[in-house]
Length: 165
View 1 (cartoon, rainbow, N blue to C red):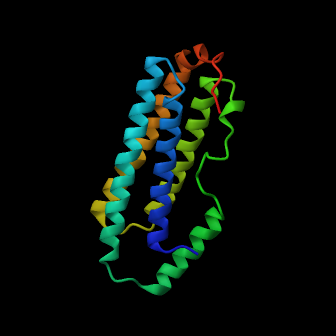
View 2 (view 1 turned 30 degrees about the vertical axis):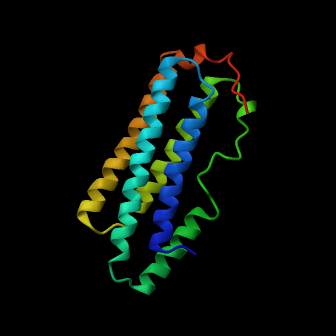
View 3 (view 1 turned 90 degrees about the vertical axis):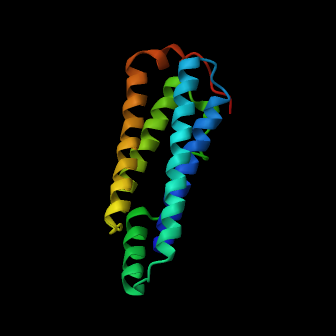
């Protein structure tokens, strides 16, 4: 079961997972353009995790309606099941190069957007909702940057470089 704090914890975990993937990838790439993009993405994920942590602190100060929280918990569990939004089970050694890594990152970012859009329905505070919308737009921008990177052929040039596991 999930509470409001659990939902935010999951959002924080999603962001930290994204940061870890981008930082791990940074260790194996040699191309400066790829490295710059991965560094930017990792830094963005850190900012998002920080905001969710601050939101969690603010929510702790608000009185909780246990029935609504239980209903939200059940809805979230029904939608997500045991999904962890983690790429830790991914065997990076089996990826055939940078292009595969970028495609994997795009899927991760898309899943993140879907989760955050669902999360919006739980946020009532207009200021928090506005900030969450900003984060969703930033995550969508991550997808655009990654797709643009693929379309330029830059990732294609890295295809022959194996990604160590």
